[in-house]
Length: 258
Image: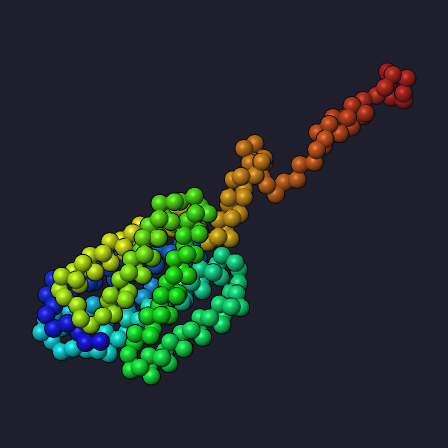
């Protein structure tokens, strides 16, 4: 995949915008898990995008073509989205499913071998697409579960753009006009992802375990009466207590009555 030789500097600079938007969006998802692995995933995804954008910037500034720098995109995106999906799944289910334990390293290794044999990183686009799609589907399901149809639709837009622009971005014969169209669409798609991630993180501001306890307490039937959910209220307890107090009153003719 050869770098385009006629590449305006403005186009190269704009290519950093979707990288920044995506990285910020993934960082916001950390609030859904409460763990640091999402930060690592964001770093991998951001580094991959930054590397390709930097390679374009060097070429646009009449510098040398750096295929090794451009080639970092799909391998790092694969690792980043795989890690992100694993962490989101672990947070949602409390464990990592066996199929995912096999899929994540297995597919990554298979695509990496294909990339080595082909002397081209394009096979890593397959693994990137799989893990990015799984992540998007997971987030759409989470948004629908929270009743946030706007966030679900925004992530759907980002996924559709990913499917459409991924193969186009891997082509070597691209005109400047086509690249402008691709980058503007990509920027808009990643902006949609950032907004969706912000909406999800705002509605799920705490890790699921703590949030579940909070929601459970807020929706407890006795919460509106100021009774803590941990308190045990036995039906008829008040009646028995009143009865016991009545039973303690001296009855006429009994000892102690007077």
